[in-house]
Image (tube, rainbow, N blue to C red):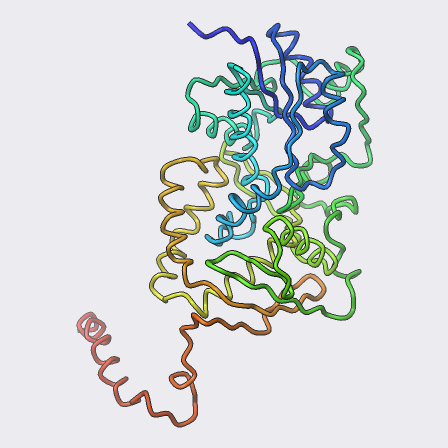
Length: 397
């Protein structure tokens, strides 16, 4: 027998879907709804969110600034792993959901709530991420997913429901996208993007300018790293969230970090999205380059083999799963020597490395030089090659 639901914690943005969901849950479950809104650096004015939630019927509303925690405990660990999904997606939405869900579970415990609720559809990945996180953190917490339960089948149905219940929501037809933004990225789905052949419209350029409109002169920047984490930009020490915000401005100004791709959702379908990840793109390029200077070859080779698995764990919602946490421990061990400075050039949609330096460098100029040296006997290479050729000669026979 299922436990009676008296109180629900809802992931609330203040937009059409979550406003309708708030009212729908109250009516359907005859329970209290506590709204939770997280500031993850999406750049929206959240000053009126609490008021809108209460006016829509919430018993209580939490609006919390989680930007530093998001950058430090979620973005940076993922960046230390160089995680990229299907070779292109830097996982901006995927990595935000575990933090939101974790905080919802914590609020549910504090408020004595029996369930959490979200506005993810039954077709998407976010439903999986929210619910797997909740299951990993508190097995007693139930989840309400209205898009899998109610008889509202479209955005038009939601608008009609909102009007019927006097929910003040503004919907515009010139920006028909489903968007998700935070310190790491801004995503766009829907509208003309549902046709994989159609070119993205001008309203999909929000964080980044088009490369054609970027400055004609390149800009140089430096990033300092300690243990795989960025700690300073252009010589200025900044907090994790500050570094991400500054890099977004830099990258966006030069049109860096736009990806238009068709990806494989965890639930089994293909979807097309446009992602703007200016700061993350710069950060990953710098971090990966510094690893080339400071990371052992075989350690890097093993780590690189695990990147697809790590990225899939994040994408599929297994952030709090034991395998991701175990893999993170390995990743972080590999990052102990990844420290130093990388100098970059930002220019019309591209980021390129101009130089790198580190007191943990494994590069020995005396070994690498084409000039005369006193530390390497080139004749030794003959024996090395003969030994490695033994199995090839055997196979040839």
